[in-house]
Image (cartoon, rainbow, N blue to C red; front, top):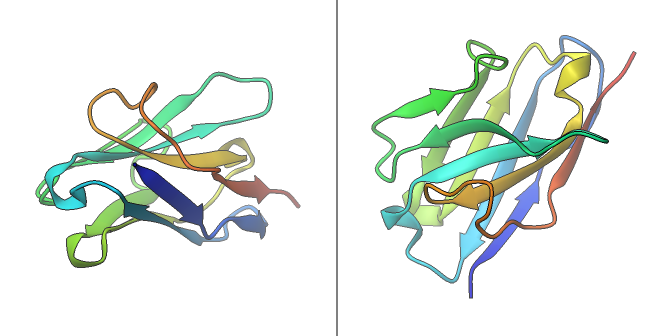
Amino acid sequence: QVQLVESGGGLVQPGDSLRLSCKASGFAFELWKMNWVRQAPGKRLEWVSTIESDGSNAYYADSVKDRFSISRDNAKSTLHLQMNNLKFEDTAVYYCTQGTNWATSARGQGTQVTVSS
């Protein structure tokens, strides 16, 4: 079955950087569009970024554009999210999901990102 294991979160200060990873298994990772989504306390799940199956194109929410960068290593079935210039409002649990239905497809346990001074 689909398994997604997110890692790399932590407690950082505004302006810092983090790199999240998502190790995928149980499906043909290289054939699937992949996403990062996040959920802040008391808020709805929010789409962050999507990358095409071959990595040819990437898309970002306006709130993270020019600060975050999504990438993938199909040989290792791993998805990454490089997050630079982190802001308080980036605090959330971050998840990776597969396919077009980013809100309803399977997620892992997530990784907590906390931006605090």
